[in-house]
Length: 422
Image 1 (cartoon, rainbow, N blue to C red):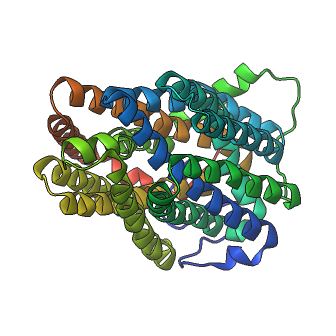
Image 2 (cartoon, rainbow, N blue to C red; image 1 turned 30 degrees about the vertical axis):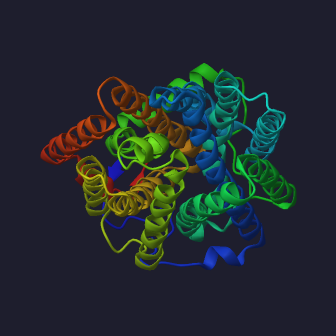
């Protein structure tokens, strides 16, 4: 049964406030800090490697292919990973996947430093990292609530989004400085090193595991149960669709920034750092309001506003040749991304029972991970075949039309649900 308004989550009255109380807990504080540093390193690499790939190929299509290689494995693996997150230790899953990410990043650095880097090798290493991401993401999202008491769960979920947002702002800026002074290889090496912090935080963390017993049921059976559950609950179904739309037409613009910087704003591909810094600053600004407001604003209002901001982001990029206006556009995109992510995250994690949370998150993340590579590839390919400006214009028009359709169908009201029963 699905209800709305102010029904408690697992018997706990919902909080109507923003709070940093989750940081009082040692396990969450360590994981929060390590994750913020590591994610900042990841954003450094997201500046360095796509710019390197674009310079090697002079093709925005290759940027799209890179996004596909990195994220498509996660599309196929994430639903199965959600089952694993509900049946096995989420900490163990994260420990293994972080090791794989670290090894992949150090391999990328070694091949670059030795002068043997090629576009194909970048794609192949991205594919390996994508497999690790596929197993990691659902476990990560469903691991965070286990680091704090149940009554502070939504605060922890919100702050997890905030730490990623802080990393999004800091990483590209640091990458710009590091690449300019020490080179691309240094940015890749720093990212590889930061995985050690997360591994250390996982070693000392002692989460309160609440995992369903393994039993004798097959993974396929459990996966089908999870898919039926998500599809039968209208709020969850809409959350997955919105996650897909937001990533398809909004987040995908992050992955073609070297081509946008070069072909629309006539700047070096490494000036994608400035655009991504603006994106991060916008997200940080947005996160301040998110933490302060808590749940005072309806999710439906936040989601509609976020999608409209994503549309404004694309429109400004499409109509201008001025780099500073591109900075403004990506700042707006950062505002949109954080608000949309927090609204949908708190719906899925806060309204779903723990034994279904991993699988529910996996299908939600499937929407995100499926939308980004498709959007990036289509924009990149259109950018090569027609023009990058035309590609971004198509993106803006498509998103605007989808917003009108979803609002007209009354989908947004379902997002205000606070409890979804099994």
